[in-house]
Image 1 (cartoon, one colour):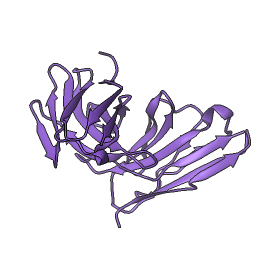
Image 2 (tube, one colour):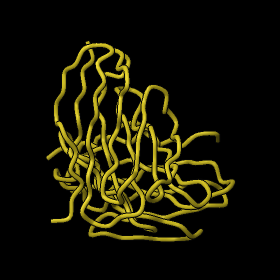
Image 3 (cartoon, rainbow over the protein chains, first blue to last red):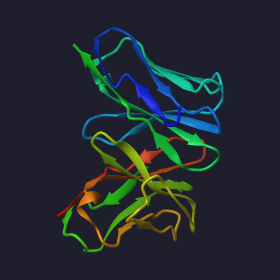
Image 4 (tube, rainbow over the protein chains, first blue to last red):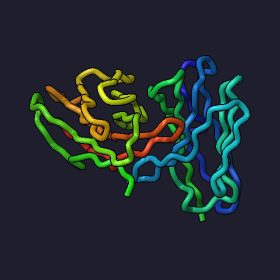
Amino acid sequence: ILNVEQSPQSLHVQEGDSTNFTCSFPSSNFYALHWYRWETAKSPEALFVMTLNGDEKKKGRISATLNTKEGYSYLYIKGSQPEDSATYLCAQIKAAGNKLTFGGGTRVLVKP
Amino acid sequence: EAQVTQNPRYLITVTGKKLTVTCSQNMNHEYMSWYRQDPGLGLRQIYYSMNVEVTDKGDVPEGYKVSRKEKRNFPLILESPSPNQTSLYFCASRAEDYGYTFGSGTRLTVV
């Protein structure tokens, strides 16, 4: 994988259901992976910063896992609520520094 | 309140007229960055800075300049704007091992 890729591009979830989606990234020279939540007409908001293989992070009903050896991260939303509707972005930092490469995002729409 | 402030929020300008978008953060963050967001292309990094007087190119630096003379400020300069620089711009800052705090965005139109 040459770039940071997210799948699916969009998904519809029924309120109360759980869902998950994927961020794939080049595994070489891995330094850190960021997850952001971006609501329409607002600015992106940081969710997680993950650095170690096997990392698991949790914030309320949202959690993420990281596999740096195979180059992927999963974001999970448990018991989705309408306020979870947003675009979720992942971004990779390769080697120490500040050059961040974003994926295209997964747009989540939670239906009441 | 901890925040990243960028101005202006909206700007319409003409081709070739130099402009500066200001960005200031009050969190003493080392890292600052500028992004542009275009439909279908996602967020792309223009320039970033790891500290005062330390800046480097991101993925799409052509047509832009930055400076980091003080830790809190990171202005984005368009010396000769062109229509292909019409975009939504975000400034962001972060501390080591933390995620970015983003500004509210600047919607720029170059006609």
